Image (cartoon, rainbow, N blue to C red; front, side, top):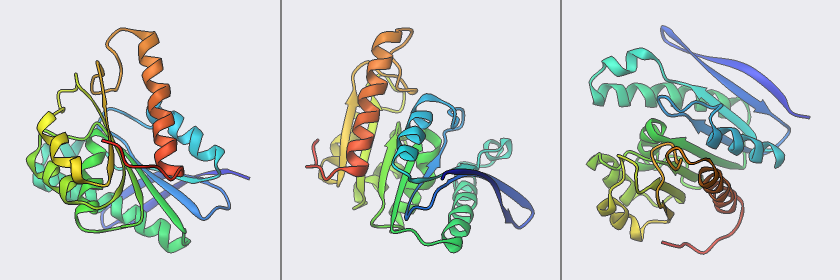
Length: 217
């Protein structure tokens, strides 16, 4: 039976909250939201639905706070990683899991890419939704990572870079470029095609996380 646990990790002088959708399973997925793209937004909402149907534990880390945006970029990135990794550490100390997944969107891809770059959780499958490909450091880290997973971005996203996708052609990531999609992976002001894109991407996420697939670029 699934329970929703409201949890906290104490990190020096601050408390990091997270939701743990708990079931008796040896599989877990850590979700890392965007700055304005929260866990009740479509791609996280339906990812959670898909994961819970498969009895996967889901962790939603509430790591974003206003003070992050007043810090210099490098300091803010380090602080995000510190908060997220503290929660991950607490969760994995409480129980071991055979299979680990990560789903991150936009700002949340920054700490995930940092972990990938440092070789953390090498067996984990990762989903990078609209990563910040205008940042050369992030592009370099993704290009040099050997993690398996999925990277999705729209060609109308301000963070889209065709040169970056070309750099990733030899990675272990399945690369998906969504024609007409913006940073929210919507088709601007057009409901029907936006819902079609949502359904296609959700199927792609499920296929990559749970099916043995041939890498496509």
